[in-house]
Amino acid sequence: MLNLQNRKQVKRMSELENLRNSKMEEYNEQQQIMQQINQLENDVKGYLNKDAIERYNNLKTAHYEIAVKLLVVLSQMAQSGQLSGQIDDQKLKDILIRLQPKRDFNIIRK
Image (cartoon, rainbow, N blue to C red):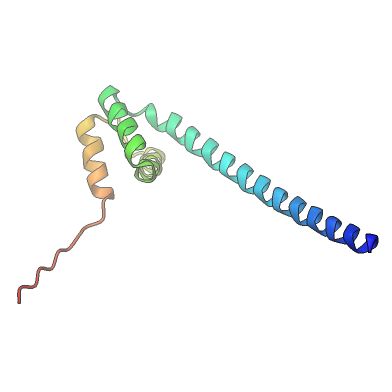
């Protein structure tokens, strides 16, 4: 009887250990992703003027996923040499508009 209880406890501890290890791996992956995003942000902010940085920060607060997409696009543009000089607020708006998917509205009246 005691041996069976010990086996159950060992099994539970093993399951807890596996769960803890998987959660730690997930946490470490998230930390690496956050570090990469922060690095991208630091690289891209050098191309933005004050107004564009303010717009980016507002976007990051309201729509984080779109802000990350914007960082990726701006980084790719910088690496390919498409960015020359500072990006002002209007240029940033134009890039954001291009990022948004086109929406087709089909209104059917009956």
